[in-house]
Image (cartoon, rainbow, N blue to C red; front, top):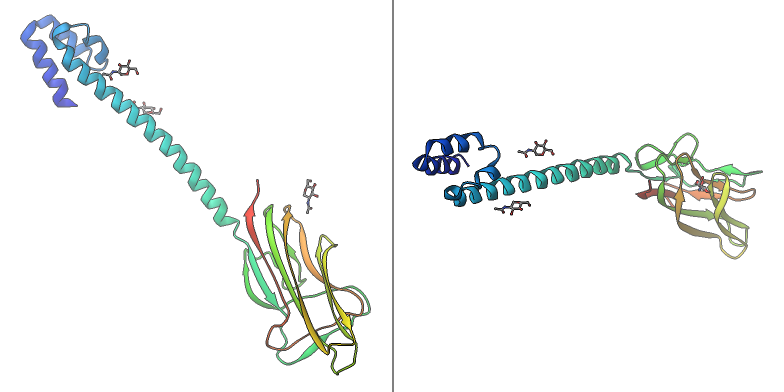
Length: 221
Ligand SMILES: *[C@@H]1O[C@H](CO)[C@@H](O)[C@H](O)[C@H]1NC(C)=O
Ligand SMILES: *[C@@H]1O[C@H](CO)[C@@H](O)[C@H](O)[C@H]1NC(C)=O
Ligand SMILES: *[C@@H]1O[C@H](CO)[C@@H](O)[C@H](O)[C@H]1NC(C)=O
C-alpha cells in the first residue's frame, strides 16, 4: 500500500508541484486523485486496494459477528448438557413392594448425573432447560415362586401425570421385565419420576435389572 502511494506521488511529482500537493492532500481519499489524468492508473490501483481493504474489513466484521454468535451458542449448548442414568442399589436380591399406595421409586445407584438434575434423595428428575428429552425406564420383578402373583408394574410420570405404564401382572410368569422409551418436550422445572402404584413390586440384586435414564436431546428457545 505504501509503495503504491509513493509511486503515485513520484508520478505526480514529475508532472507539476501543485498536483503533488493535491496528491498528498488526497492520499486518504484516492477517488479525488482520479481527476488528474496522468495519475489515473495509480489512482485505479489505489481505488482497487481501497475497495479490497473495505471488502476485507466488512468480511472480517461479518466473520467476527458470526464467530461470537457461534461461541455464544456453543457455551449455551455446553451449559445445557443434561443426562442421567440410575438404578436400584441392592447388593443382594430383594424386592421393593408391594406398597399399600403410590410410591415414588428412588434409584440410589447413579451411573451418570450430568448437570445434576436427578435428585438421588427424591428420585425426581427436574428439567432446567426447556427442550426435547428422551427417557427410558426398565423394570423387573420376581413373584418368588412359580404360580405366585407377579406384579411387575410402574408408571412414568410427568408432573404427576402418567405418561406411560408398564403392567406385567399375572400368575403365569415367576419373573418378568418391561421397558418404556419416550421422547417428551419439557419446559424448565418440569418433573419426571417413576411411580409404583399400589400392589406393584420391583425386585433387583446387584445386576441392575431396574434402570431409569434420561437425557436432553436438544434444547429449545
Ligand atoms: C470501487 O468500488 C466502487 C463502489 O463499489 C466502484 O464504483 C468502483 O468502480 C470500484 N473501483 C475499482 C477500481 O474497483
Ligand atoms: C472496519 O470496520 C469497522 C466496523 O464497521 C470500522 O469501525 C472501521 O473504521 C473499519 N476500518 C476500515 C479501515 O475501514
Ligand atoms: C410447557 O409450556 C407450554 C406453554 O405454557 C404448555 O402449553 C405446555 O403444556 C407445557 N408443557 C409441559 C410438559 O409442561
